Length: 107
Image (cartoon, rainbow, N blue to C red):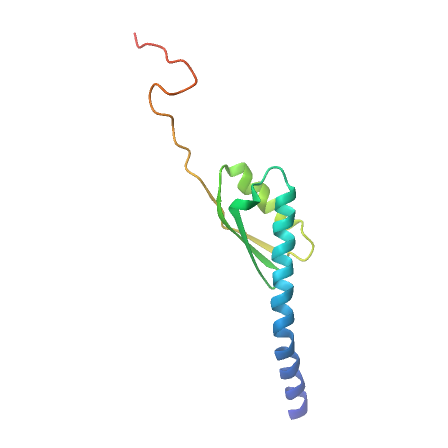
């Protein structure tokens, strides 16, 4: 029994660096997939991976871009779960008189 515990412990310890490297590869694969998708600005997205769970971090311009990033990440081989923590940048209304749409005078 003691021998089995030692063997299992050694296997777990030996797999540590392999898991970290595998997580790095998964994060890289997700980021590359995001970069290939026209709906997502991958430069605004940071990707973390741990044990098949991918976390998307950063700020994107629209809710559609946020949703697209989550969809793209979920389709990458090896991704088991996506935690989409992307935030959407606040849309600032143009200052009065600067809108490209002509203003109508009030009556």
